[in-house]
Length: 409
Image: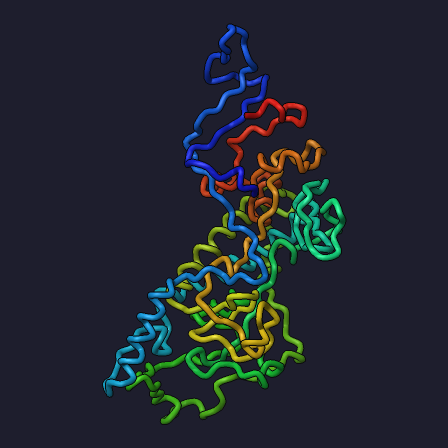
C-alpha cells in the first residue's frame, strides 16, 4: 500500500454523492455551497501490511538482539559450571502431552483446508503473474501496475496466466528428522533425507504419528551436564538398536498418498458457500493451532530466503542463494520463525463485488484493501470474514469513481 494511507488510528472515508452525509454541506466565505464530501472517523484502526522486503534486507527478528546475546551469555556460563541442568519437554526429548491433541487437530485442519480449496478453485478463477508471481483471486484480474521486476513491461502491468491451489497455498518444506534433539542434517545427507511440508513435520514432532515418516518417541528424558547432552537411551538401549540420528528413507521411493484429504470431498459437494464457511473455519483453526505448537516446539527459518527447518536447530545444507550467500559459504542465516513463515499468507487485492465484472484499476489502488489469498477465495465464495481482517480489508472505505477523484481532499 502507498505511504499516503499511513495516518492516525481513525480512518477517513470518502462519501459518494448519493450517500447521506454525516454533516451539513460546507460553505465558503462568499456563501456558496461546496460539494458535500465528508471525512469522518469510523473508529476502526487501519493496519498497514508489511512492506515487501528487498533482497538485501533480513527478516525481522522475533527475539531482540539484546535478548539473544543475554541467552548466549547464560549458555556460556552454564557450560563453565559442572552441574546438571533440568530440561523440560520438549527440550528433553519427551512430548508435551497437552499439545498432542493440538497436533492431531492441526493435521486434520490442513487436510480439510486443502480439500475445500481444491473444490472452490473449480468455481472461482485464480490468476498468477508469470513475471513477478503476484496472485489475484477472481475474474477478471486487476489492472494495478505493480509488476516491477526484471523483464516486466514498461507500464508495469502484470502478465496474467491461470493459477491453481499452489499459488494461494504455497508449499513450505522441511527436512524430516527421525530424532528432533539429535544432530542436524549435514550437507552430504540432503539427498538422503525426506523433505515434507513443514507444518506436517511440526505435527509429527508434536505427537502425530505417520507410518511413512517414523520418528523417535523417547520414554526417558535426556540430560544436560555442563552444556553437553547425555542420552541414556542411546548408551543403554532397551528396545531399539543404536543407529543414526537421521532416517534415510529416500526421496526416490514412492509413498502412498494420504487419504486424509479424500474423506472431505463428499462434504457439501454442490454447496460452494458451505464449503467456503468450513474452509474459513479450518484456516483459522490451523493457524491458531500452529501458533500454540510453535510456542513449545522450535521452528527455524533463514533470515534471507524461505528455507525452513522444524527443530531446535537449522540444518547444515549449503543451498542458500540469497543476499551475500558467498560470505556464508551457502549456509543459511537461521533465526526463530513465525507462523507467517510456516504458513505464508499470500496477500491479494480484495474484490468487493466479484459479480460486477469490472477489474480493479490502478488509479484507485489507495482505496482497495487486501486479504490473504485463501481468505479472499472463501470471501468471494460467500464466507464471512472475521473482524480481525477489517484493518486490511478496508470495507469501511467507500471507493469513488474515477471521475470523482478530483473531489477527494
